[in-house]
Image 1 (cartoon, one colour):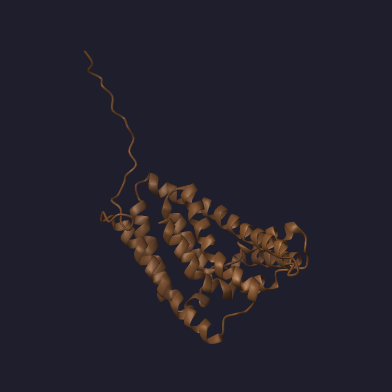
Image 2 (image 1 turned 45 degrees about the vertical axis):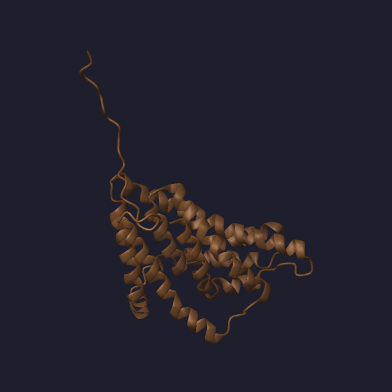
Amino acid sequence: MLWSALLFGLLGSFHCIGMCGPIAFMLPVDRTNNFKKISQIFLYHFGRIFTYSLIGLLFGLLGKSFYLFDLQQQLSIFIGILMIVIVLIPIKTFNKYNFSKPLYKIISKVKSALGKELKKKTPDTFLTIGFLNGFLPCGLVYMALFGALATGDAWQGSLYMAMFGLGTIPLMTTAIYFGNFLTGKVRRYITKAIPVIVVLMGLLFVLRGLGLGIPFLSPPPVSPQVDAQYDCFRN
């Protein structure tokens, strides 16, 4: 499933350009020195991926509890169906029942901290900006976290989110170098394509949960077993 995280990050990064693009455009990189510019961009991406990995670790740990109760397959199917349903729900309905309002205060503090960091040019600034950027609300990140949850393992969940972050690097780096390079028409096409990508990911999770014995796509179920065999009748 890790390859799917990389692919999801790569395709979903078109959406990231719209959400996190303004931050990328405003990064105070040193454009007069190529080495400094590359190192600053590297630190920014490292900060983002570190945050994604950290959150993925927590969600993978949460998913492990489902694995211990032998519910990993059901969880994968549920997450896949949930991803598809979320795409089909109209945006107006989401705006009406916005469950993220309690997080607004935290998000506003993150944005405020980002604003302060964007005015600096010290080496640690880019790492901090990337780290804070990773906490900003993003629908694609939420979908990737579903994948981390479905891994059923803390380290696998962390690696899943790291792979997702790596997938976003090419386009995000292009945005930093060339600014707002996507036209309005291209953005509209991307907006229409994102739901299709999410649905395909959802179907992949459902297929994985069915355990059809298809290598890599739908491996057979593996239940946690405890070796508790005791030979009580030895001669």
